[in-house]
Image (cartoon, rainbow, N blue to C red):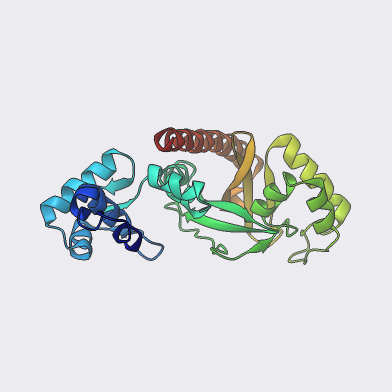
Length: 275
């Protein structure tokens, strides 16, 4: 506001210079933060001071434009794909989770296993969203925890390391990873072969390498030829037979393709809007 007031004549024309409806819309968007990811209409009304009917019109407009989404089951608004794409373009990897929220839930319901998305952060990976299925098995994933890329018992780390640069691979494989079970792969040459296989087959496996009785499988998500996310499914060992793997892998790869296309479409739409 100081910049506006300091320019001759603009202070007097403040009402004419500012678009009130745009200001109100941005005021609604600003209510959605890391601590307030989902808000009801009552929440928006109370926080913005707008009349309920006014807040509703703005929220519905933002929903129609893709900046908010509305869940009729919970009556809650949350960040929509257009706003998430804007955040991602500014460096917010967590915005990807908002764009793919419904896709992840649909996949978990389809394959009836817990699924998770992970991004690379430097020499680590971090799960940015998971979704449990209706099964009793609910794995405790290191949500928000940074896992070193060379800990290839973690399928998300394996996928990200497999598509990393050769310099990164050499540097990280020089550091022996910890052994969690007798199945944990720690030999650098064996890990290198695994990484090559991941690139060749497009899939990484964990057969009780971190915890006995728990297995996992993950695939890469590409956007415009860049590998940006690892999509994994975590399952109990008794549901990780060859038959189960033959069912899970194609479904994960199909979902990864769909998610990559969605991210590309959202990104393209965002840049066309902002351009």
